[in-house]
Image (cartoon, rainbow, N blue to C red):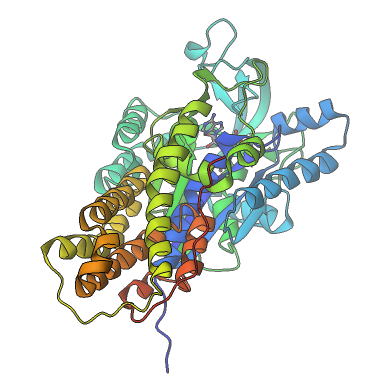
Length: 497
Ligand code: MSP
């Protein structure tokens, strides 16, 4: 039998600078991309999901110098920490790319060759912010600082330039024709006004230091770290050896708001110049503060994902990050709010529903018959369960991760209310038919909920799948109705201490 080709989907995280240890801000983009990747896989797509580390540039070279290590050893050590973080937060990535890998150097150089017609040599002098890895226009420098607050330094060097100025109209046309190319809308508007205000040619090489990818045929020049970094997305898809067109056309780049311009302006310009396919969407998320303040090493309030996982649990962290704040907006990481979310949403609402229903079925010996008609109240919950994934599909395709969780929790609340109203503990004495109908509807709802939460809370979903003896590999399983099912006695999903 010929196997139908699966539809393709691609999602990426930014690749992380290795100038410090991973923190919750890094985990955030990674978990977001993971949720989307897991949802798409369960929905039958062939998914490419990449993450990794951005290892070249002045900032990393200086951090290595400060650490006293040679830059290669330093890169290996810090990159490893990011790889470990991927495991710690349960990412399901296919590829962890490092920009120091041979395959990437080849890819970035091949990209350079393809855009060479838009490159010319000149010299640059201006203010450079090493922390942001970008030149800052003179009129934006205030008191020796970039708009981001990072210090700037004067640089003068021979440099290659990319004719970004000649892409202004093409980019505006791209945004116009593809209103969903940049999300959320407010960010899209910011990018459009930035491009409308006029684009200057971009310095894309450095000759004052050598921690970068050598430019083909230009001794003494290395690539500007951003052109190197952006190329990671196509390297990961197999460029230049493979045709990356179809995966690229389905690709969603998840990025933080402060690096949107690189992704929504420079990256498409490079791709258009190279004649390569553009991604489907760039989604910019907001920033987390910690207990009301900007996260900063000097304040000592940087949220360490390992601490949170140790104290609260991994699925708890994954839930909190995407329920507490609408994806795209800024948020505050507060332990108090996290405790409340865990106690109310996870333990009281979800945990309780699963516990009370499955324990009850187990207590009465299972074996639910399914030959009955559903009454109105039962039909309502049943239909809502059936529709959960359909509704989520729409929300996940818009990266509305908070909306997807709200939709699931809506069903959780309605199911809990349904248990309270139907009182199965009384029906068991009075009406077995109704009891079967009520419990079957509740099983359907818990099963849909388990599939719905699976991309967000994979460990919790797995526990529910195990209680119910479901494989949990694809949303298609939701179509199978229960018959004569018995269950394991569930252990509490979110035990209270
Ligand atoms: N190396 C570049 C990205 C290149 S992608 C081709 C870079 N690296 S970074 O390590 O500085 O930042 C990586 C991501 O972490 C960014 O998207 C940034 O928004 C995110 N975050 C860093 N701190 C954050 C918070 N406090 N909150 C949320 N995300 C934040 O930029």
